[in-house]
Image 1 (spheres, rainbow, N blue to C red):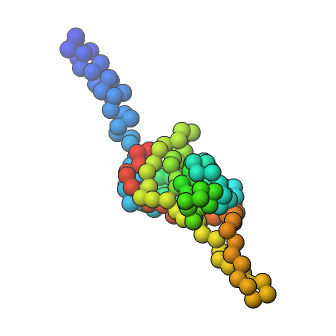
Image 2 (image 1 turned 60 degrees about the vertical axis):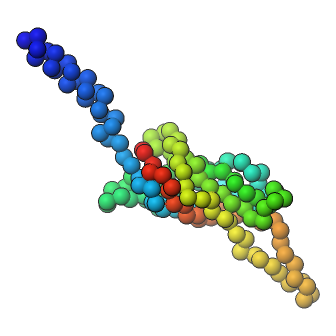
Image 3 (image 1 turned 120 degrees about the horizontal axis):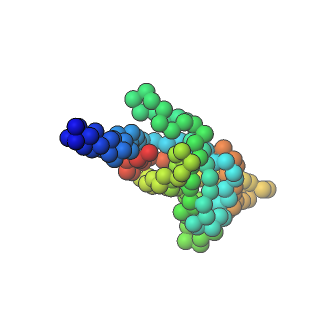
Length: 150
């Protein structure tokens, strides 16, 4: 009887220890995440400024939705026109919300947001616009550099 109780107790303990690992969900490296901004982003943002975005499409693996469209994503401005050494606005995503907690992620590189207005002409003289803003719902694509453990 003592041996049976001990075996049951060990089995219960192993279930509690192994349960989190058995349900681990992994989004593989190389998976593309399509996100859209939820607020405007200016080309003159401060480098390091954070922003929120949402997944624009479901992230599916083998027919299963691992991250539904609308999931919150955190991002950061990596380069901007506010930094005199940069000619572009580049952003990257840094985390995704899973069950109310932000899970860090790493991508293969930032996304360069480009102005759709490259130049204009006023009385035959080209005029270039140095500052621009990306409205809400700007779409961007990022590729995971590392597997994402949900």
